[in-house]
Image 1: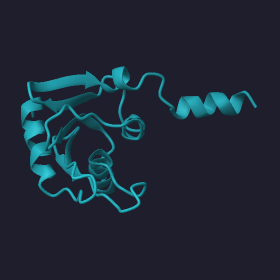
Image 2: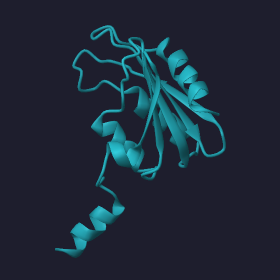
Image 3: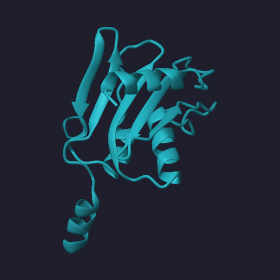
Length: 136
């Protein structure tokens, strides 16, 4: 599946977003190593801090179904403004994905692709935790 196909999946996921407060609808599509695609949408809550991001919904669904190896992620908003995963979602992705993991963002001018390593350098990893424990 190429970036455009994955963006199309993310765009379709926007339709199920629950965003009555911000009215900012987001969809995500996560490609697993075996070619399965899991989608997610943002789900807002009146207190905002309990809101779920589209990327974490997609990751959570894929992991629940037994997948832990991912190839790429596409993210789109109804505004097609190049929305990218926030820091929290990037950290969640880094739990399962390496620096070369591709993230496709939907813009008015087409698809912009970055790598997770570029978007989140020096991530907190199991190595980070091991190093911290060794220094105690």
